[in-house]
Length: 444
Image (tube, rainbow, N blue to C red; front, side):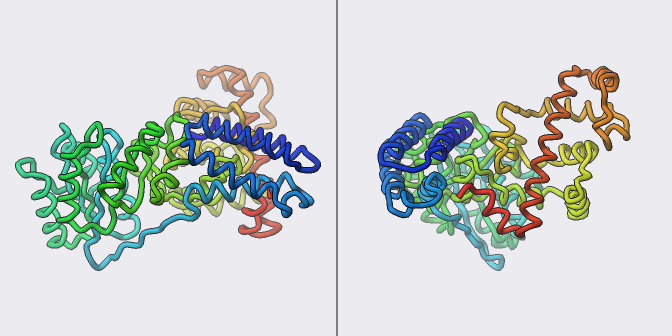
């Protein structure tokens, strides 16, 4: 979602770092570019104005102007204020495991509430909870069917009653949850195409009866400032505790994510990507700021890997990386496991420096299938020693995998680039430890 904005920031930072000394003029030029980049990303104008003023004040301070590395200090000022704009730090909700916790999801129709209900249930089940989904959206056709299907796919129970009104469904579902010993009830509510009095009255009545521990407003990130405006309207009526932005893997400009916290004053709790049940992440403002500015997000990358990779395989992989013996066979195995971690383009964006080093490299599911086919068409010796793959071998591999020699060349080049980046990360980590390695990823 933030690819274009990231590219703009990288260009601005490159220019400002090239200045031997900062002055009011070059700071003003840089901030003008920052302002234009944010506005073109559909960020709320008042938010942009406030952000630019704050960064400008810091950038013109004595600590920055008199610094040995003023360009890097300028980048730090942008990073700090961007992280603050996104909420400062992650809000972690700790639910009790010895009683029923209740979560209500609200939002407009089409925002992804029903899918998010299932994602939340899976998220908290991984933390040891016993969730129950309650289908209170009786207005949208097939909403109940959708929730039941999602629940069945995850082996999560769903309470539904097509003959009852939403308030009665809510009350009866909570009674069942307590009888069955569930520790979490996630309630799906009805939405509309726009904010209206009937919907708000129903939602208020349901929340009054449920007495939820958390109320999350679900917004479609691709709807831009419309999502921000809807969030503000809902908050006037329902004092929800957090926001969940869905479709963060879309091709929108990202203005909603950068505006909603400041405009509404409520933390961004989760971000959703894709339709898969595991496509939900706890929102970390500082990590998102790092991604947007092209600095990567190695912490989230490690967390995703820990969730999806076998520990023994991880130890073997670490050993190979440390000894620089990572092969195409290892690459193939990692690609197959990365499919379970989400979009590969998002994973690449989490690697510090990858945005610029892999500029122009687009990887989709079909591309992954082609890579698998190419590596599978290689002999064991070729996978272990790609340096021996000469012209004749490349032609044979391309014929066997249904690809071109140019595809083989591109794969081998990308593999070499990845090995170089792995050596870089490994070198930093081995010298100074994990925490220092993370700090060193930042250009300040």
